[in-house]
Length: 288
Image 1 (cartoon, rainbow, N blue to C red):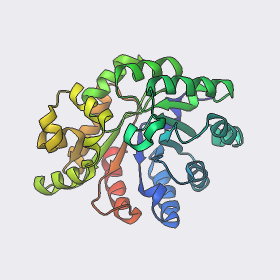
Image 2: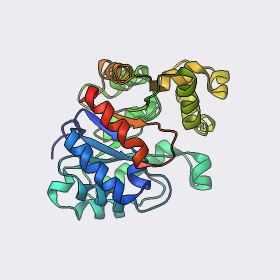
Image 3: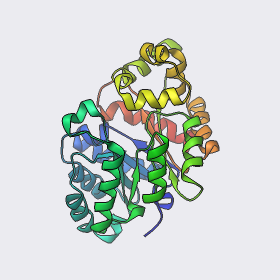
Image 4: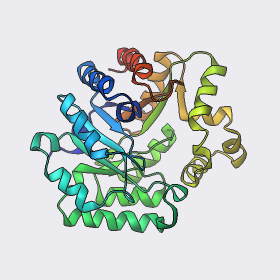
């Protein structure tokens, strides 16, 4: 099996729209992304819907791209079921799948959410038992202990809502031979007031999540900055402005040690493929 770095390539798309938007539009857009040269699509997991079915759908409509999860929620998917689905794929499709695994958040999962690090360790052990290769999985790791587990038991890491400084920390934590594939939110808007409004709207519910708050504090942001969704926090987490400015931020991740960066288009237009698609096209001109 190809290693994860080879399979995801250099530039990908992280997209709510391609999973939860109109499926016909998503099929056309995914095919176009493949032709443009993006090398991976990352689908959010959440707690509902048919995630493996959505992976199948996008595998069928693309030729070469890897279809990844960002993330598969370990509390909602039994390891045996995940492995059964993966083993049922054609070998060519297995080579085009990367399962990003995550522990989600306590207030989302409820009483079942206990000792997430231990739960992830156990989950990976069960995946070992049912024969799902380590090169087919990575972790949505933010903190040092989860980064360490990713290094020891998976192909690498897929951090979300982080900065190039975190990418550098992740590279140091997982070593030179593991995948580092951060998500980067992008806002194709030159007006700073409008761009930051869009960033705040996209971030508004995340600043109550303890996992993210802890991550941002480790990166040097204060409680008050997080509570207020300060300009400094927004500017650090989202790349906004011209395509060239956005390309500079993506480049900072690569300089910090990323193998792959997946961009998430913040459109302000809801979960709409048609709103995101022009942004993907425009950014392809400077990123690919």
